[in-house]
Each structure stands twice: as C-alpha cells, then as structure tokens.
Image 1 (tube, helix red, strand yellow):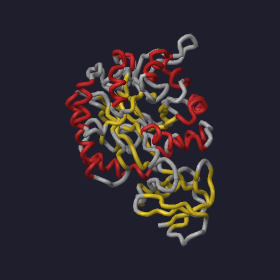
Image 2 (image 1 turned 45 degrees about the vertical axis):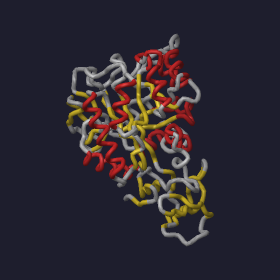
Image 3 (image 1 turned 30 degrees about the horizontal axis):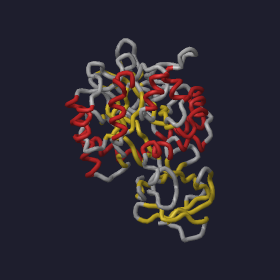
Image 4 (image 1 turned 60 degrees about the vertical axis):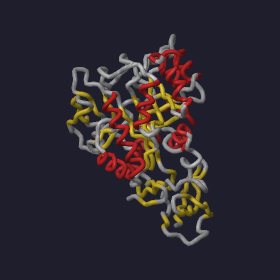
Length: 379
C-alpha cells in the first residue's frame, strides 16, 4: 500500500512524500507522486503515531481493577485519538489486586492484536510517599521490596516496563538499582524528595519524572525540590500532563523550553474517560466526578484533582496552540521521546524506512482523520 500527502513529517519538517507500507512496516519513503497511490491525503498532515505511557483507563475500565473485556475496548478506542501504543497504568492497591491486574493485562498483550499496542505496564504506586499521595489510597502505600516486585513481574509475565517510585522511601536506592539492572524504567514521582535525593536517584539509574509539577516537592529558590530536579537535570526524561489543568499553559511553556528532547506528554486519563461531563464514578472505591473542564476530582472534603479525561490529539493541540510550543518539539513528546525512553525507538517514533507503520493523518484542527497501527487502518 502507498499513501501520500503534500505534508508528510519527515525528520523535523513537513514535505511532499509517499509512504509505502508492506505488512506491518514502512518499506520505503518515496518522492511525491513517484508511484501509483492507494490513498492520497492531499495536503493533510501525515505524522508518526502517538504513544501514551501513563494512562489509567477508559469507559469504566480501570487498569487496576478492570476485566480483560474492558481492556480490549480501550485498546480499540485509542486510535481515534491517534494513539498506536500505550502503557496501561496501575495505581496503589492491595498486592492481591495488583497481581490480578498484571495477569489480566499480560494475557491481553499476548492474545489480542486489535487497536493500539500495549507497550508494557506502568506501575504507579504503591511505593510512593504518603505526603504526596495525591488521589492514591494511603491504606496501601508501602516501602518497596525486591521480593514483592519479583512476584508482580512474574504475574505480569515480565511486562512491567515502568515503575513510579518515591526515591526517599527506597533505602540506599536498592529497588531502583534492581529495577534498572533488570530492564525496568524508573520514574520519580508522588515524592517528597529534595533536589539532592532526586539527583542521587538519577545517578543510581532512575531516568524520568512522573507528571512533572504534580504530586512532588515544589520548587523553592532555596531548595529546588523535585520540580527543580525534573526541570534542571540533563538527560532525564520528564512526563507532563497536557490538559492545561494539572499544569497551567505558562508552566507548560517553561517545561518544554527546558526539557525539549526529554519531554514526554501523557494523558494520565482515568477510567471515566469517554463519559460525559458531570458523570459520577468510583475511583478505587472513592466517588469522583468529571468537572466541566474535563478534569476528575474526588468527592471528599478537599475535592482533590484525581486525573484527566484528556485525549492525546487534544493534548497536542493544547501544547502547540495554547502553550505556544513549537510543533516539532510538541510532536516529539508524544512520538519519538516516549519511544526513546522505553528503548523501542529503533522500531517506532518516526516515519522512516524499516520502522513500524504507526501513522496518523492529522487535520488542521488536530482531529484524527485516520490512524494506522502497524499498517492497519483503524477508523
């Protein structure tokens, strides 16, 4: 199959070109109008597929509690927002509940190819700080042990790819060092760590910060905190939620100016994603409601922010059009950067010969015209 457009994103700019796809891969990039085309997208933008490495659920399915059928529905829905790959993200829960969730996700990874691809599991908690727990249930927050993680990884058939951890709760960074040695990416978050502790954790193998600005020690001019570490430590990736609610557009602009090639935009979307405004739902046993701005808040005294309902194409729009981030930097944060972080950029993240045919046709208003996951049309 050959598709073409006057605006194909190659390298770091748009240019007229054709993409030839065979089975799951891009087998060639041709000059515009070189070969007979199957689909001509005119002047519509053709860009790499998107990847969301921190997302919790969709239409009532929660990665921590849901059944396999809900995960299949979620996988099949994600290409509507341009997502070709994602990391179902669990949150703090009992060991038995997490074990069950890991088993279900692993089974779907091997048995179902429909929709977006599961790239691995992101385990957010329970090895976090109670002080910065956010919407996590502190009943199950604990210090991590290598023995328990090994049991989780066995249930997940080795597919836990990211663990969010509070480094100040990890004695001598023992768990961090074990995770990194065994090919698991460590992200620092939900943490009271100082700048120095965060820097030491990075030196010991941690490589990312979870939803920067949120649920971490704030920046202060006398103690830069974890926010300062996320923004200032070179060669460390950092997530950011692109909804303009968890983080203001001004703060988003600062983040992207400082992180550039190490910025990773995520949705941090909850199971209420896909439901209408005002919907009440249960989030780990606690009532939450979707607010008019699309954010989800727990219905306890403080009404804390629990997560988002963000779609990734909407996040791209926010970053470019509202935070005024250059398109090339914003796009990289949902394509090439998350793939580099996970170590899968040899197969994904850009439109190049030999890579997976994960492709998005993007309209001027950032709506999705078509998504190809491994060369298969999804819409």
